[in-house]
Amino acid sequence: NTYFRNTVFEGRNFLDKGVYVANSYIGYGTNINRYSNISEAKIGRYCSIAPNVEIVIGQHPVKGKLVSTHSAFYSARETLGYTYRNKTVFEEQKFPVNHRMSTGQDSETDHNGEMDCNGETDHNGRTLQDSYQVLIGNDVWIASDVRILAGVTTGDGAIIGACSLVTRDVEPYGIYVGVPAKKIGDRFDEATVEKLKKIKWWEHDETWMREHVTEFDDVDSFVEKYSDQV
Image (cartoon, rainbow, N blue to C red; front, side):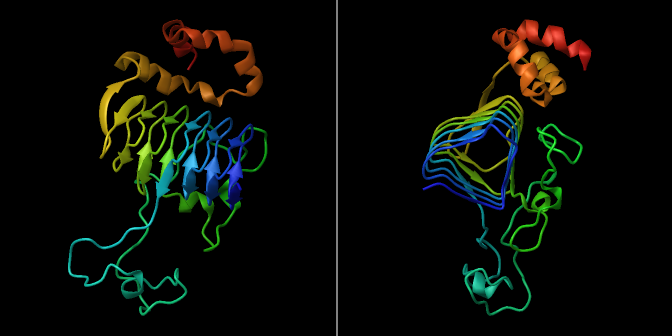
C-alpha cells in the first residue's frame, strides 16, 4: 500500500506501509514511516520521518475581497476538472523563499553518481527543482503526526516534536514543538552548531560513514577534528 510518483530517491531509502510520496526528492539514507504523506518536498540526507507526518499544500483565500474559498472562483488551474476563471487571481501554491536547496551536491549528480532531478518534470511540465513547496534539510528528525505547511524551510539537524504544526521556517539544529510550532531550544551550543553547519558531514559517501562512525559518539571531538578541514 505504498505509493510514489515523480520522485527521485538518492538511495538507502526506506518507505513503510501506507506511505504516499509525490513530486519530491528524497535524500540518501532518509526513511519515511507508515502513513506519512509527502508531496512537493525536497528532503535532505539521513532524515527520520515518523508515522503520520504530512506536508500540507494548497492555499485558499482567508482574508481580503474574494467572496469564495473554492478554487473554481479564483484559479485558472483545473485541479478539480473544471474552473470558472481564465486567469488566476489568487495563487494556491506557496513556495519557500529559497526554492533551491542542496542535498549535499552542487553538481548534477546524486550520491551514487546518477543524474539528479534537475531535468525531470512533474505532471504540470515544471521541473521538479522548481515545484518543491517544502524544503527539509539533512539529519532532520520529524516526530509523529507533524504537519508542515507549504512555503516552510526546515534547517539541517532540526527536530520537530510530535503533533506539531509547522507554519514558519525552522532554524538549523533547533528543537520545535507545539501548535503552531515554536522553538524551545537547540540541540547544541551556538559555536558547535556553526561548526556543524560548515562541516556538512552528510556530504561524505557511505564508505566514509562506516570508517568514521565511532566519531559520531562525541560531538565535541567531532567538530574539533573536522572544523579545521572545512
